[in-house]
Image 1 (cartoon, rainbow, N blue to C red):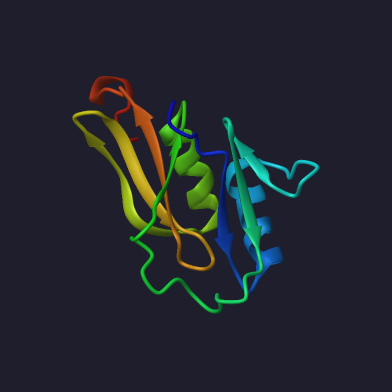
Image 2 (cartoon, helix red, strand yellow):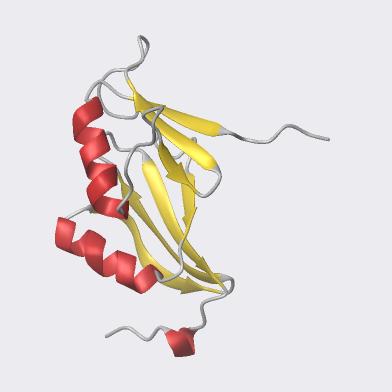
Length: 122
């Protein structure tokens, strides 16, 4: 049996700014270990001795978040004034959009199976 991904760690020199952004963007809170829980994956934002400043290659690792209502999250993120790397758009597999967190890391929101008929632009 192959191993499973139990957690992801994003290194940052501005941990509190990053954590606040994730709290506001996705309505998550830290668990007892200080990680956000996205499904079965723990997501840590921590200081790291080899990390400072913005992400140098933000597309190297992209965090994909499966969402139930991409358009609702899009509206919420718009109200926050996030930086869109890729506006939400219809693709054959569903809806997808990409935002940058405060360090410039790419976070994609994906609603698998969303059809154009169910999600017309307002």
